[in-house]
Figure (cartoon, helix red, strand yellow):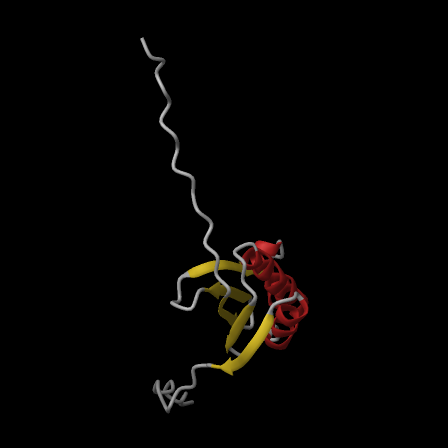
Length: 130
């Protein structure tokens, strides 16, 4: 009788993504860096909180630098070599996150500011009468 053969587990194939996009969402409280493929599917992400900072330290430029470097390191394992950077928000980590991406060995093709700006959106609160 033949020996019972085990079913071979399907090996997960690691995708090779040569270029993509890096989204930097910089708020006053935190900086979130997400790296996607050209279609917009998330490849890697990191933030001030995942690095290990809590509270107001998450919004610092240094936390943004570490978050960007961590996300780039994860993305480089997928073979990413160049990114387009899209920045949103007005936090203090904007510039530092871009510098960290450039310093980590990934080529930055373009930098675009996509901060949402209201065109006279919400109505302000009523005035206090005393």
